[in-house]
Length: 353
Ligand code: ASP
Image (cartoon, rainbow, N blue to C red):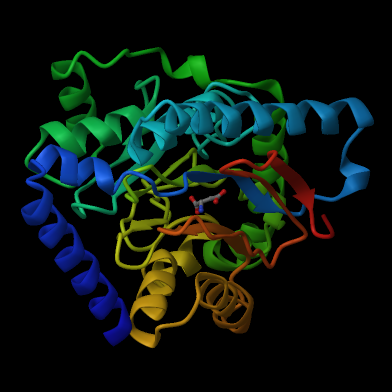
């Protein structure tokens, strides 16, 4: 902590004195700082994902889509865009793909609809925007950005969020726009199982017995731009057969999404109820900052110790201002990809990659 403060202080003094000595304008002083290595990481959800669930063609298609999204975000950074722009660009590719539980391909609620959640945070300003339970907004992550930039609030839900979306001229769609046959099948199977177990036990126990692959598939991205600024975003359909306006961790700042230039940016995926209770994203950043430990150690501890002890499955993607990336998960697999300055893209699905 102390050395972080010292290095910032020294950095500031050097910039200030060089500006004074060489008569640099503020803009030039800003330029002198824009050499930060750029990097991005994305996820497409964690869960019971193993090789035998895929045909070779399906596996290739998933990998190609992850690569397309990470490359798209990286291009934004390469062209001098901000980390927020990069996060949005990558997430929008995944929202538009039927492979992931966000946007098109979102899971169904118990009542056969889609209720979408998303959030976004800027690590420089700590400004954030989030939406929950929206049904007709074509890109929930873009609406989260509008909430951050154009509303006086951080989080909007349901009909109010949609009214705001219309006011902001966000593209609106029918709820059926997000339909996919494979998610419908998943809902039918989940309801069959739920109705049977609920009749024998109670609603709480019934949901606890749903297999984990009914729950996950969220998408997210974290990035650092050439200015050294961090951003994080997450978008999801939530959990199959969710009821009563259930909201998971994804739209909750501190649980599913967090970014702070002083520590790191995190986007989570997994059993949302645990990620809310253990405020996973913010906890990783706080551990880094207060314990002065590296990103990977903070992320690993929370995902593979704290969450495992609690019984919460899932994973995170995390990045720090130096472009270090950590993507731990405690489930069988996690769709993930990353790209760093001057390195080829890394794309992975299974544990041992
Ligand atoms: N965390 C999300 C939720 O609980 C689900 C996921 O990550 O797939 O809503």
